[in-house]
Length: 130
Image 1 (cartoon, rainbow, N blue to C red):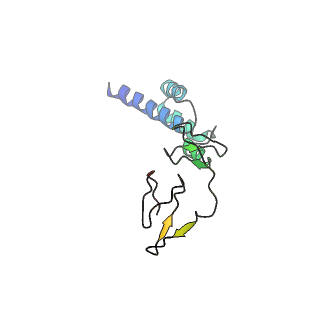
Image 2 (cartoon, rainbow, N blue to C red):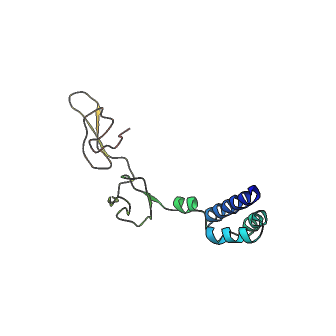
Image 3 (tube, one colour):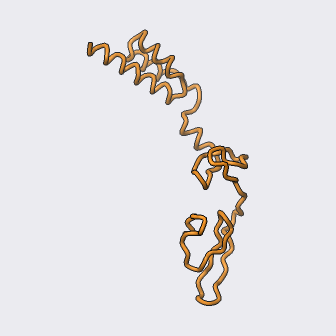
C-alpha cells in the first residue's frame, strides 16, 4: 500500500516539475504512472525546454503597474489587473521647488503630480516620496 502511495506521490512531483518547465503536468503525470516516476523525471530533465519558465517571462516585461505591482507589456496603456493607466514619466527626476518660508524642498509626486508639503515623505495618493 505504501509503495503505491509513494509511486503516485512521485508521479505528482514529476507533474509539478513538468508544469514549472513549461510542459503539460497532466500528461507527464500519466507518463510517470505508465513508466517509473524516476525514469520519467530523468526523461523530463533531459528533454530541452519548450518555452521559458514563467519567472523569466515576467522579467522580460518592461512595465510594472504602480497600483497593483503586476507585470505588463512595454506597450500597455492600461493594467489588465487593476485597470490603472500607465503614464509616461520623464526620465529626469521631477522638478523641486524651494519653499519660501523654511528653506526646505517641496516635492512633486511622480504618480499623481501633487506638490507636497516640504518634508513630506508620503503623498496623499499613498506614493512614497523618498
